[in-house]
Image 1 (cartoon, rainbow, N blue to C red):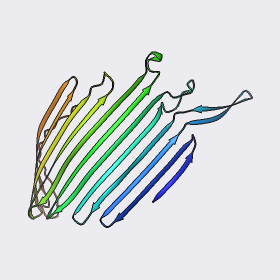
Image 2: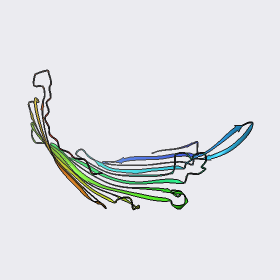
Image 3: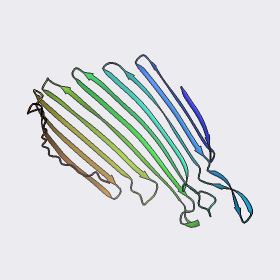
Image 4: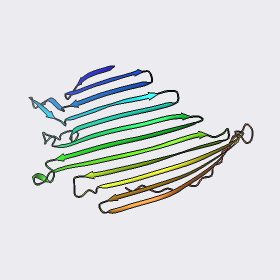
Length: 273
């Protein structure tokens, strides 16, 4: 267990807490970190023999980070569950200008993340899986936007979910196979009419085969596939691509000298934005 507490200028306070432990094959850890600063800046000014004492109010700032990990580990297996949280609350801009004694603009960020991954050794191979869920909310407020007739209060919500698995297996001393697949879904929503609500689906897969001969000629072949689809209020956009890739590696063919020759073809596309 570890803790600390610090104080500083501008009303700054920083504190943290960390704890971790292990029981048999199980292990766990947690942490918490908090900071804040009120931005109050007292100062004295001497002008033509006249002393003036004043306090300038800069922007307020605070952030909170927290999380924990729970895991299991053995000789052939590993599983982890991780949670992360972040909260940032701040006044904007970074410092109040001289003719304005307050910071009316505010921005708040709230972020949650959950991650799961595991790994298993099977014979001469390894299989790994992973998944994550993330939710992020950003809110911006400015009551003086468009002078006194307007004001803005905008919230953006970004959610994403992805999962996948990869594997590797040594079939024989000269033949190896590997591959993986991943699927990701994300969304972006806003409370303003000028912003589109966006949904995106992206998947990709790859399969590879390696052939080795007397540690001299290495032949690696790889075949991949990607697909992306995006929908929004003004229409939809989708695109896919087929991505083959073949490589030939020649190693130590001439005794002490080493050479490498690669041939490949790859077709890709730009993700919609």
